[in-house]
Amino acid sequence: MSDDTQEEKVAKPKKLQTPPGIHDVLPKDHEYHTFIKKVVRHRARQAGFRRITTPLLEYTQVFDRGIGEDTDIVEKEMYTFPDKGERSMTLKPEGTAGVVRAYIQHGMKTWPQPVELFYIEPHFRYDRPQKGRYRMFWQFGFEIIGESDPALDVQCIFLGKKIFEDLGIWDRFTLQINNIGSAKSREKYKEGLVNYYVGKERSLCESCGNRLHKNPLRLLDCKEEDCKILAELAPKFDQFRSKEDEEFHAKVKEFLDELGMEYVENDRLVRGLDYYAQTVWEYWDKNTGAQNAVGGGGRYDGLVELMGGGEPTPAVGFACGIDRTILHMKDAGIKVPSKDNVHIFVAQLGDAAKKKSLPLIDQLRDRGVRTVGALGKGSMKAQLRLADKFAVPYTLILGITEVREGTIIIRDMSKGQQKHVKMEKVVDEVVKLIGEKNLDKYTPGEVSISKD
Image (cartoon, rainbow, N blue to C red; front, side):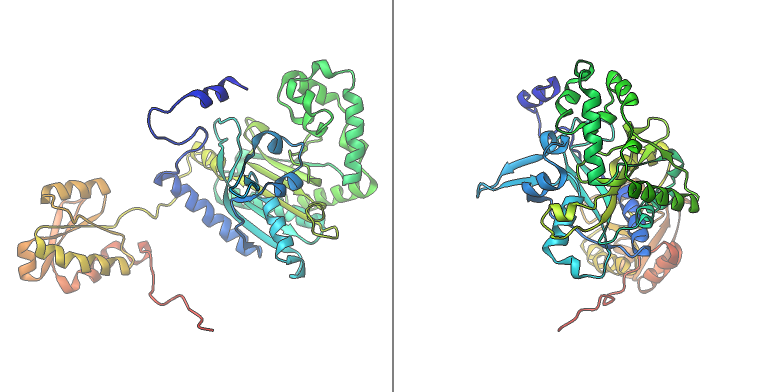
């Protein structure tokens, strides 16, 4: 047990707080989340993907079978526990296995193929917390199930690029690609890899020593210096790929060239999950490489069958980390539009003014004006200070005199100027001041409800 894990186990928090590696998403970061989700949804709809949400909690077997029992995720990182019925349950550590389970369970093989799905969800792994790597983390992902074509692999890769372009950070990444062969080719490669490492065990780190006979592909992306040197001299995938594998890989590169996408052929890129075959790729940070990769994916043609779906079913997909994407956006100085800025603050004094302000606030909100009302007992001076903290462009002031005269004061907070407006005209006046383009429009009744 590592020192940091031991410390977590014995230390008693002095106050209630989030567990290590799990954090609150505060309003400022939610602005980034909202913007990323908007971009992802837009690109997904353009490409014909439909959204799916799978449960946060699945039977452990979904991931044991789907991800692979000898992977780091299953062996070390899953949050697994028995429920009250003594069934083994797991908080989902990644999205693809759950989507494939849903594909099988709901008979999606009868849908028009391929089935194109996307998701935006939180995931959980008991990983060592560090910058951009958390135990509860958000991902968006895309899956194409039911058809095999190198063009679909490229569509996924290019879709990731378009999203990162929309977010203003594509120039921070390089595209790393590899072809790890079919399942049959990969098994031959594993044998060659194990034979290469025989006699070199003493030079491996403890983790790689454990992986050698369980998951030898993972030795190729170890970050320990001695392991990196050995990996550089290890056999390459292209020595074991079949003619069909090579043809598939050549087509992927041909289509990428057609789209003008630059890429780096990385013969050590394997990805960490057992279900991958043929194309794999990652989006690497140009400065730190794999250490700060923002996401990646690959083809997983055998997973549907492996999870009980019957006949072999081709599939490809990718996922990207939202938390790490936000870090890149902040580091690049990307500012996102905020939907949380308040347009109007309503200040009032006295019960009569409070009664008038309640329907007024409601009318403003229905017209798309983001409105906050100070309905407590604060003085007018205190309410205006609060309006300054909300940084509103205008404050509506309603006191005893205004109630009696049927008027309201509109105060321009930046200029310090104000004017009286008739109560029945104030909503139209405010909408005009704020400007139609800045309003969040909602028309009651715009959602149709079927009574069938």
